[in-house]
Image 1 (cartoon, rainbow, N blue to C red):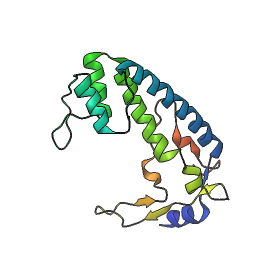
Image 2: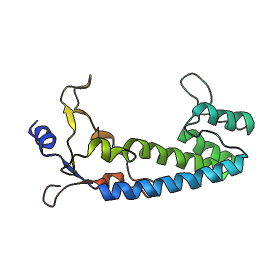
Image 3: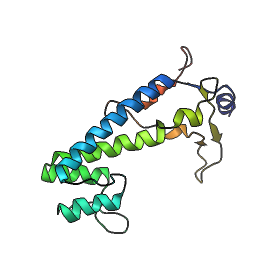
Length: 168
């Protein structure tokens, strides 16, 4: 319990420069991926919309997947895209999966993160909730540091959260 109070009060150092570097790199890479995807399928569409992706994948391109949504429809998830890539071999399917991974990390942990969570002291002061779940595990918010993504596609977002020597 003490560690939660200390973390809230003292905060956690955050590497603003690395965040800004990742933001520039991710935006550039997402633009490059979009260009390749749109060129391959012959039209632009909203890669953030599962409905528009489904229209392209299953309608226009006539692809199929064994992975389904809760409602029973064909999924456009990263796993489904990877499965279709293995089945059909279209590199743009792999690009769509990579775009989804990068876009998710970018939206949740990079874009606007510094402005929203990093205080003037250069630290994040998260809230932890001791009894926030039905299983009585610790949960957190503003920001939730319990779901920081693993390193992927050359971005290790966990490196933005810094611990002084001797405290790791």
